[in-house]
Amino acid sequence: MTPFVDRGLETLAPETLRARQWARLGELARAIYPANPFVTEKWRRAGVAAPEDLGGWEDFHRLPFTDKTELAADQAAHPPFGANLTYPLARYVRVHQTSGTSGAPLRWLDTQESWDWWARCWSFVFRGAGLDAEDRVFFPFSFGLFVGFWAGFEGARALGALAIPGGGQDSAQRLAAIEALGATAICCTPSYALHLAEVARARGVSLAKLGVRTTVHAGEPGAGIPAVRARIEEAWGARAYDHAGMTEMGAYGFECAAQAGLHVNESEFIAEIIDPGTGAPAREGELVLSNLGRIGSPLLRYRTGDRVRAATVPCDCGRSFLRLEGGILGRVDDMLVVRGVNVFPSAIEGIVRRFAAVDEFMIEVYRRAEMDEVRLLLEIGEGTGHVPGVVQEAVRVDLGIRVEVVPVPARSLPRYELKARRLVRRALSR
Ligand SMILES: [Zn+2]
Image (spheres, rainbow, N blue to C red):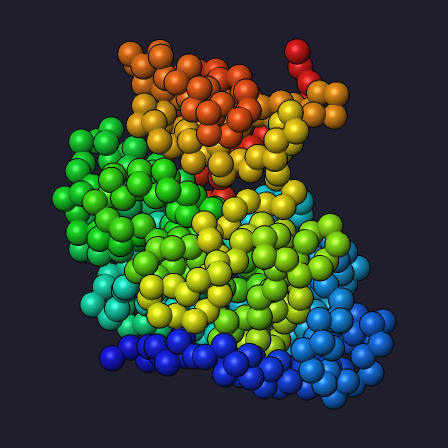
């Protein structure tokens, strides 16, 4: 049996779960205060003089939020790792950094204990996707500084599965390795799964004939978008699962067999949803997370910048963990306002990906008179000249906005192994 299977933990009654979180939080607070300079300074400013001042959940909810800007400023002021460290540097065994999609990358250190914690969190992800010790999980990932699938690799190993590294290879070599080593699952961004499918098609390789039955995706919201998921599943002859995590926070969200949104691993994280404007609790809004097992470099009440919506009915799988309907809906600051209509780029992707003729796309956003205008660039195959008009009409019908749709030559848009950047904001050029 795998070491981390714990269905009991995932189906705890809400009050038991809260009590468990509270006990873990108390342990964490005693470990980090006053040892961790970043936390201590922040809490002191908020009037917390000792960990015992946290007497109940209302005190927790009075703790200040932390955001990414603050972490970046801290790391700039205390290079290279910042002051959010509970232990002397010698205790840390791993360094990783964020992908740097927005601004300078954040660096993050882990102790052996917190690295083991990462692996444990990922085992929830893999168990949710139905993987076990029989599986061979291939990671088409470059294994650089970005934490991404490093932790997933550890998680697969911790689950007892065979973890296969796919670094230092191009897409064709990766496809060959998947076949030669009998991989049953792959773990990568949704964009890269689609790119591999494109490469396979060009080389006459039938992905569905490979043994991959499960794909697990992170790094972008894609796998939670029905049209993207359908496309991946069709290309690979597999079931595609969404996962959410952040370098600075950990691997917190996963899908179960019901595939009804992302569960938040509430045995290791405390989740809140707030109105991004007022900070008040909300059913739909910005996800705020606290991790309970990363004592060496913790984050409490962290504003993730991700927009989510809480489900109100229990999941068919029986897990009692919070469920986020539709997964990550988008980045709070990526929301476009097109002629008064609020639109997330993921909603546009959800339409574009329905059309098999579209190989790749990009969303260009122009600001004109305080309004966003959208131009959609589509890479489409030969003989599909009608597609831009059809996509434009689908966007109008589904989202109620008018966008300009422009076909571009095949292979002219970038492909991504890590986080895709398909939204580009441009100065007004016309
Ligand atoms: Zn479920």
